[in-house]
Image 1 (cartoon, rainbow, N blue to C red):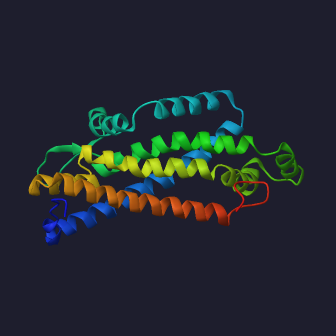
Image 2 (cartoon, rainbow, N blue to C red):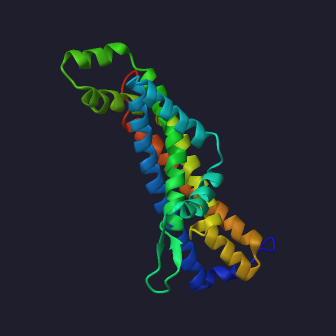
Image 3 (tube, rainbow, N blue to C red):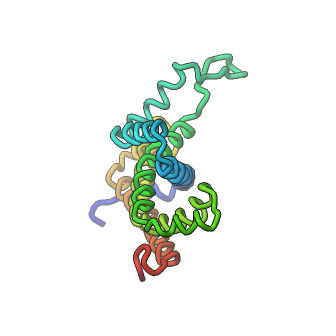
Length: 238
């Protein structure tokens, strides 16, 4: 139909490549998203302390990783860190090799990029909280750490969930750039398949559908989480 040829999809080797690519993409997205959320929480906590030097460091981190392309950050991590001494020796060949694998470099760069965006999302959530809530926690004897994790994070996370959904979906799609540094994720195997079969259009259509399905599942899951965590007056009411 329409001149499309998907006979290559019956090849077990290509099926295995696609499954492996999807699994690696999900692992990369899950790891980088989890670390990015943690960075966002800790960064927002640091900004709430109102310490001059800490504010300056966090703002510098946000500006650097938010205002530079994630692909550049990934390439920097993969090609530059080994020149700074982060390398090891292969026990078999005796050759020098990077200390961090391509997957690790991609995960680190995506985590830092997503973390910079998550800091802004959590900060906006914290700033919308009435001061009376934090004052009430302080009057009850909660420490700064306890107020943050037990009062501020549960409320602020509900407020910033729509922003976090956008950040996580964009981070998921950005994992495709990891193919540039030979991370065997979905786009990497897509390139291997169309180089073998010369069916570029068919492969790209299939990969597009896979990404649409995966990102739609993520968006739906986040919307259900938002509905489940809704509190009156905080977040989007369902």
